Amino acid sequence: MTRFLPRPAALAATLLAYHGATAIAQEDVFAFIPAGGRTLLEAARAEGLSARLEDAVASENGDMETWRGRIEAARAEAPGLAALDQWQTDTLAHYLAANAPLMADAPLPRDGRDMALALCQSCHIITVVVTQERTREAWLRTMNSPSHVEIATTPAEREALADYLVLNAGIPIDQIPPELRAGGASY
Image (cartoon, rainbow, N blue to C red; front, side, top):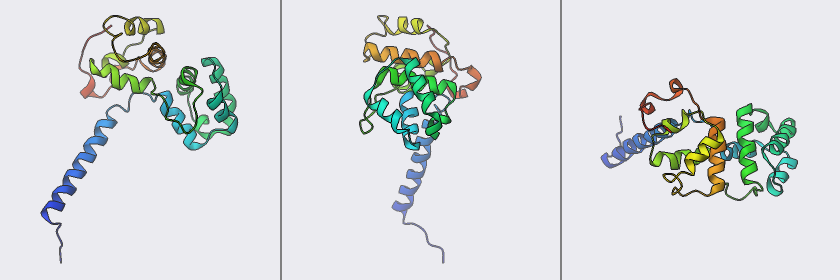
C-alpha cells in the first residue's frame, strides 16, 4: 500500500527542501572567496590547537611575523595548522595580529572575508572587490576616502580588511562564478 503525506505536510516538506537547497546554493556561490582568519582559527581550534598556541592566542599579542612564527612552531602539534597553505597561514597571522588576545570561549571578531561580504556588497557586487590586486596603502586610501569612511568600521577593522584583501583578493575572473562576473565600478 502506498502512503502519501497529507497535503500540508507534503507542501511543508517540499518548501523546506527547496529553501534549504536555495540557502546552501546561495552560501556556496561565495565559496571561491578564501576563508578569513576567524574561519581558519575556528577550524584549527576544532581540530585541536597545541596548548602553547591556545595560551598565546588567549593572552598575547604580536605583529603578523610574530604570529606566523608561532603558527609555524605549532604545526607539528596541531593537525589543523599543518594543513594550512602559506596564504592561509598569513591570513591567520594577520587576523591574530589584529585581534589577539582572544579567549577560547568568547565570540570571535569578524574577519576580512566577513567584512568584504557584509560591507563591500552593500554597494558593489563582490567581484569588484575580490578581483583587484592592490597594495595595503591603496586599499586603505579607498576605505578612508569620503565615500567609504561612513561605512560602519573602525580604523582597526579597515586595516584588517586591507590586510585580508592584499593576501586574498586579485582572484582571476575565470575563478569567479559566471553569475557574479557582471562589471561594475573600479577603484
